[in-house]
Length: 147
Image (cartoon, rainbow, N blue to C red; front, side, top):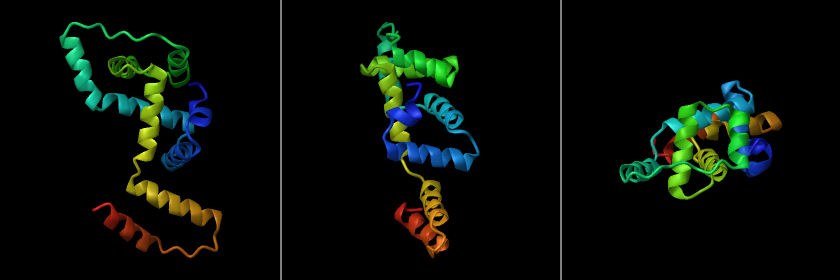
């Protein structure tokens, strides 16, 4: 997990995270940390399972695997964020490192309007000869997204 942004995620997902980090003016590692904290603090469907298991008196203490240790060391997640991911991972029967990895992949694949525009801007920067009507791209993206 220590190399998660570069070595453990699919290239396309890393590209999205890098693009978002650059747009936010943050280094990739810091962006991923902030994204993880935000994801941990947002309610998910898995929280319903966590609440049910806790109401049944189950103790949701996951195994501390190497990926979990790297997650703590690399991203320095606050206790509440780490706790939320740990309980969700345990409740779903998935190792903590795998759970967080999948959460990041899901986040990267949930494209936003800003992602679309950033990708077109990046393409135009790579090849300045491209004549891209950004207003038309924006209008098309909004239309396709139902905005």
